[in-house]
Every structure is written in C-alpha cells, then in structure tokens.
Image (cartoon, rainbow, N blue to C red):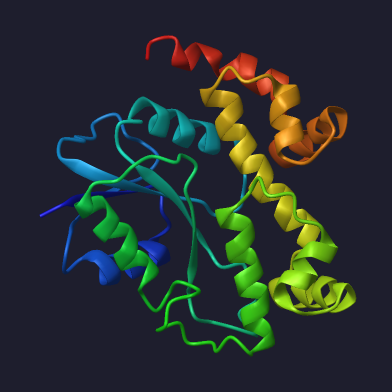
Length: 241
C-alpha cells in the first residue's frame, strides 16, 4: 500500500484527507517537527498551507521539501470562502515542480482531484452556474498556475463576467481582495524559488509578474523580510544538502 505523508496540515483538513485517502493508502501525519520522521517508502507528500505566511514556518516547510525532493509533493490549501456563503471544506492544490509521476503517485493525485472536496470534480456540491463557484474556480486557477500573468480583464473574460462583478464578489464571498489573494499565492511560489534555487531575484520578480522593486515591497509585506535578506538568512540551511 502506497504511503502518503501529510506534512504541517491542520486538523480539519487532515480529517478530510484521511476520509478521502485512508481506504486506499497508508497515511502518516507530521507536524512542523520532522526530526524523527522516517520517510522510508513515502511516495507522496501533501504539505499544508493556512495562508498565514509566517516566514519561519514556510521556510522550514520548503527546506524540508527540498531536502526530500526525490519525493513528489503538492501544496494543499483550504478554499478561502466565508462560511456564511459556503461551509463545505474544499481544498486547492499547487504543484511547484513539473516532474513525472509513477502510476501509484498519479493514483494519489487523481483520488484527491476526484473527491467531493476538490473544485472541478463531478462530486463537488456547488454547480458551475452558481456565482460562488466562479469565485472558487478562480481561486483554483490562481493556485494551480501562480506564474500566469492574469489581469482583472483576462480573469473576468475567463469566467464570463464583468470586471466590476468579479472584483466586488471575490472580496464579498472570500473576504480577501483579488489582488491580495494573487500576491499571497505568487509570493508563496517565489519564496520556494528564492530558497531552493540560485535564480536571480530580479528574474523571480519578473516571472511573478512584478517589477523587482515593487515585488520586494510586496514580498516584505507578506513575509516581513525582503527577498534578498530571506535568501541570505536561510542559505546556511542548504549547505549540508
């Protein structure tokens, strides 16, 4: 039976994943402390994100994933929807690396994507014509393709709605502004690249869709530290790998 590691995932989401995967796969849970963790025979890692963007926790998570980069992983996030509109606990998936998967690893990913908790699944409880589904679908697109340079106009065309409707209802239904959500997802992916690659920060900025100076301001707003300071501070953690 294939083994899956649930890394740094909140209790509610862990219960969901246990219900989805528990009958087909062996589930191992791990909090933020992985020092005594045995990764033998682990075939897939699901790493949690709670949108809090705490630099120490996020960096430790990415360092752990890089250290064990021979194991495919996906970042799993809850939907960002106000409970008054939608209490169902769905999730989003973000794959940071484009690598080939074995059949059992594909089976794990397909099991997640075919569950009732994943937007786009035929079992998902909100129909596509519901306005709330449009906001959820948009979050899914942004989470899965963080480097696509979506504008408000392109996103509204994609969903078949006006820019004013999208901007107003994204904030109303999710509780966060669309641009703020975009920045969090893009800075998350940028942090992974800053920590795990030698790619110039200028290039990372441009790939994220921002001019370098503005990107540095956004990154500092999310993570407290600038991209350059972040890379320098955590560089010593990678020298032993």
